[in-house]
Length: 263
Image 1: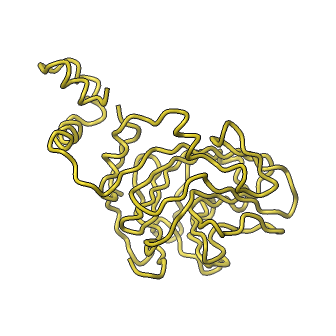
Image 2: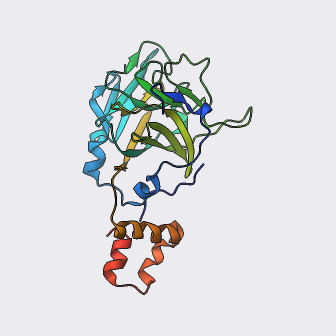
Image 3: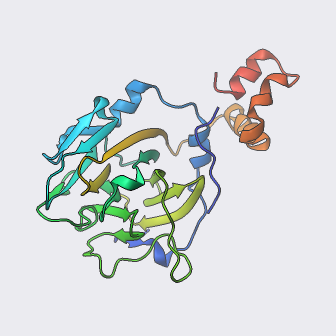
């Protein structure tokens, strides 16, 4: 069965979402999320990189989790093992709300973005090499010091989204966009203009002993699919997540039932 169900909720210069209130899901995201979860080895291959993080970060479980040491007046970040320059990619970040502190930023970075600062700050997105969403303040950062950062997602004045423990990051390198999803709803593109770069999953944190987990959900390349595969997507979409478990009761050959369930 699929991993997550979502509802729809470029230029050369990366641009904040405020100018593009488009809540439609990237093409291929539903297909990506309907595929079976990746195995543990693949998860670790796309996990946090113990050789590419702040000295105050300890990577655990082969890359599936990191913990920040309780160091005062320091902001510390970590980058993923894999960088993405093509295709549609999605991963889940799990970050307990009580472990976020004043600056908890989730996004992407190039290989040259700094991962440590000697003060508390929204490090991810503070320079030209990274893009991030502060999930506590609800602001977008890129080459930003924070005061003029746009809010995300766009909401009525005074309202701010409460981000749960788990959120999804959606990076579409074919379109050059970065967006997020929470509670099964895609919030729209946060940044555009990312084509031509190689970008890594990244976060920056200030809370001592916070633990941040990453779960890579998969990739979809912009390639043509067979009619058989497209038919499977159509059937699964028609059934919906709540009725996929009833595939076994359909009057179909066993091989077809297994195909519909990615078995």
